[in-house]
Image 1 (tube, rainbow, N blue to C red):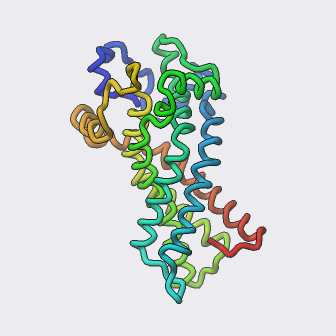
Image 2 (cartoon, one colour; image 1 turned 60 degrees about the horizontal axis):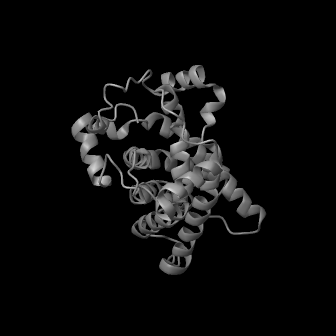
Image 3 (cartoon, rainbow, N blue to C red; image 1 turned 30 degrees about the vertical axis):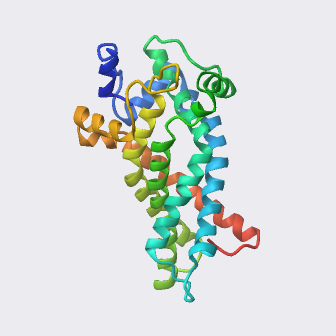
Length: 275
């Protein structure tokens, strides 16, 4: 969010003085200026989001893989089917979870508002839901849903598709078996690819969801995700789309590792075939 060129439209450029740059200085600044626990700002809506998002995407992907597209007799699953399945699973899961993601993003930006001397908008998760609903109606809870599902499609193409493809390649073409080593290697690859594909969409999604809005719920800075993309590249350069890549990768890799190892273990304990 730092250095957002579009804020000049509202005459806020002069007021913006980012006190930190980069992941480490940003983290230290949050701890020093807001407190250590603020590093977990927005964790409650993030948990709500993953209950809906992860549940939706996993059920959708496996249904597409096993029922709609189907594997070949030798258990081979073509990459193009995996790509389509991953993107569709991300779109469906994220659309369902958009209200929780919106609350998470806006709550995480409360610290920035405080440093800029602006009044805080929310007292907590439920107040945030209620306020957004009161100001924008049901439609307001799906603000930014288009760039959000675009991001989810790319992230899941990186996460689900990479994990599924790498895992089955290792099992079918190497001496590795379907065990924790294979799951770990596959999840590491999926976290890296998901970060590379998802960071630009994450930047655009976060800016659209956090932009100021009029009384009708329309954004004041960006007309669409394409408009946001163009303004970011023109005003800040192409690499602005990869702002936050390092923390994104450092978040996605352990998250992917924990998720896939846990998911595979739960399937094993439940007597379900491995993913």
